[in-house]
Image 1 (spheres, rainbow, N blue to C red):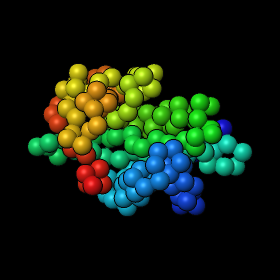
Image 2: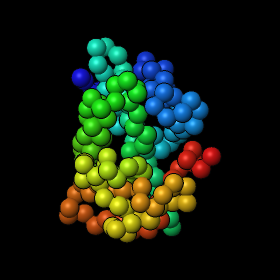
Image 3: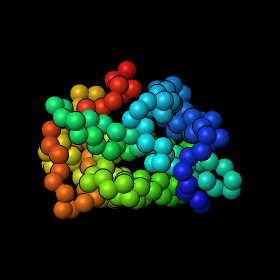
Length: 167
């Protein structure tokens, strides 16, 4: 397995991953809109490759904080081809995102997802640290945060998702 930054030539495979891992329309649309927006962080878009085939993808984007100019880095979405799940590709992509966020000097990384899955990587409920979920969040408990810098003063308030999430 190799994890590397996503390349322009990977995007057809990336969209196929999200079509098959989630649904044929919503998540691929979200990925395309996020990639075309100013919140996309290309250096934190990673693919997992096995036997010369892209089998997983994760991207990271900026979210806002209500009433503030603060930007928060968010891991979203993470997808792995269904037949390649439970082989460690998703974990490798989460680790790449955490490492990339640390390398950028970010104090935290947000994610909306399963606490059972993301808790293994150090994510905890965001509201326990003063970050409230946006109205678009499916469940309050699903918004989580990994603290990357224990010395940093963490922002507080309601997270604001970028426009593509609100469609």
